Amino acid sequence: MYAGMKQLRMAKYKIGEVVKHRLYPFRGVIFDVDPVFANTEEWWNSIPAEARPRKDQPFYHLFAENADTEYVAYVSEQNLLPDTSGDPVRHPRVAEMFVRGEDGGYRARVSQLN
Image 1 (cartoon, rainbow, N blue to C red):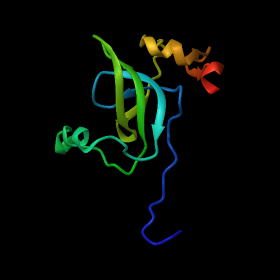
Image 2 (cartoon, rainbow, N blue to C red):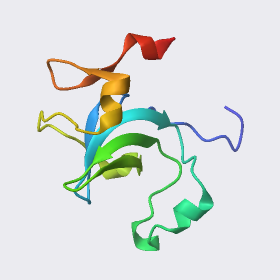
Image 3 (spheres, one colour):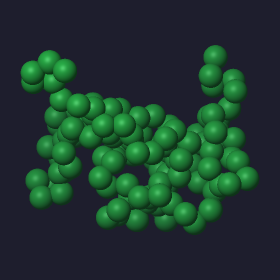
Image 4 (cartoon, one colour):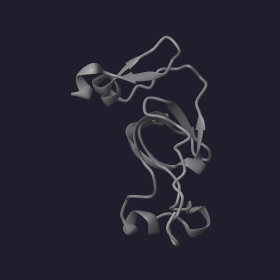
């Protein structure tokens, strides 16, 4: 390893996994993973300093939902927990990209792999 290079951590969660936010009341299906923070500085600075996660960890793109609405969320690994409710995620994009398995998790639709 070259001096100054950081070791990338393996992502704890995988695409298709259902997760929930550690602090806020929302959950979702992971549809993409960045090995480290890859959003804008404006987005980063909009997070209150005391709640700002580290940038050197995986960040997850979620088809997310809360009690009121569905949206896309970008969340650090440190702020996610597995969602073990077994409830389907109602975000409309989920059905476009994933098929729900018997275990409650999601797998990519074959047509999405081409």
